[in-house]
Length: 182
Image 1 (cartoon, rainbow, N blue to C red):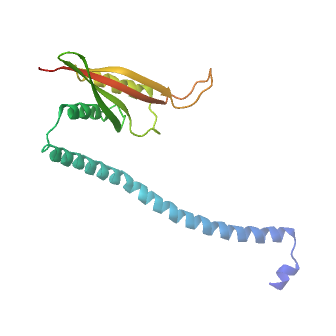
Image 2 (image 1 turned 90 degrees about the vertical axis):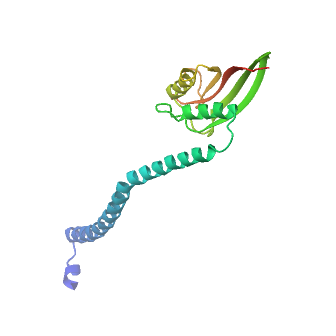
Image 3 (image 1 turned 180 degrees about the vertical axis):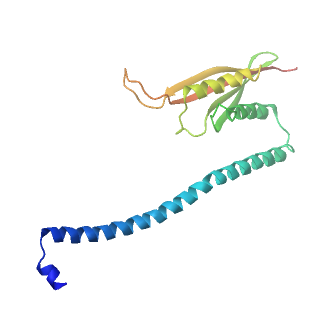
């Protein structure tokens, strides 16, 4: 061994460093392969876990409906419930909403019920297609509901002439006119 180092020259030094590097890299790759296999196993179970969470959410929703059947449902509650159900419909993808009810009496015997609607999470932005589809579905699925106000603001601050992404913050107001018996 002493003779090997005594006659050390550049090619032998390169061979020795390469051999040591190969051993170290081999150990690192072996350790990373084990971690990769573990991540792949976890990834395989994610779809099953997501499906289980969705099933539990549907079960919870059903239980909430059963629990809610016992209480008296007011008309303003059903109006807000309608707005929230449309937000969860297929191809709408609006999510959770904050709904603020108000009423006006434009003339005797008629009452306008208004709902101010805005996304619950103000940090989430929406595409115009989703917002438009939601507002369309609100009016199309009910002959009483009309969108009376919509405010769209771009999610990004842009300079004049710039084209931003199709992400928007929005607020809307819908109105349902009902006759009131006197």
